[in-house]
Image (cartoon, rainbow, N blue to C red; front, side):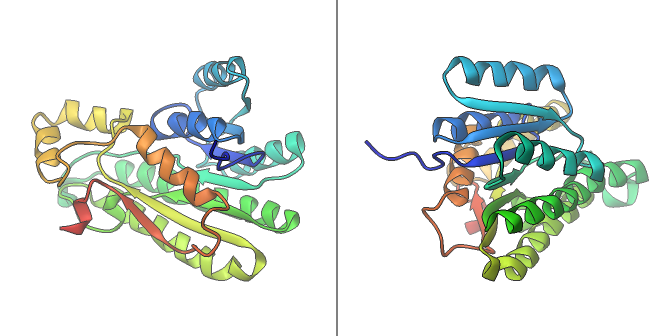
Length: 254
């Protein structure tokens, strides 16, 4: 039997109440992790933790808005106080924003996308790294997007935000490599999550168009993205840091 990837690792997951984050909670817990789930929706977090515990897995949750620095820090503090350390973190929380031409984009859309997708990662990285330095090392995966590697139409703030996540990943990886902290990112392609479902609902025909541009001809299940994050967080790739791994059905390879 193959050993579990994340056996006994204490892992914080942000944006854990739905989509890729909820899938990550299930995948990481199945791989032996002690998962600490953070998001804004208490009811969903409670339901998911109850599901995991009924399956005999170890899980807890903390209500946290990553756009607020104090709440992001409190999520890390909760993990450390509950389990004595923080081994890994999956900075997954994010939003998609509107699909609107750049010259028509409103400031409030820009602000909300940047607050969650960029400031949220910034707010999480600082206390996570501090906790891992105190614990002798760790592993972090940031959730970017293929939009962090290439441009897509009518989504300028989202593209800028996901490029910033790539920049944070590379900067932190370089800065803390000698202190035992690995920092990588994933760049998912189109994934069947609430964000993309909302985009597709507001833009008829978009899903078929996106799938036609993907060599595999389909979108990903959230679990497929979570599986890659689990491997990156694990000790199976100890010499890998500063990488941005596309999980996109070949989209950026064209």
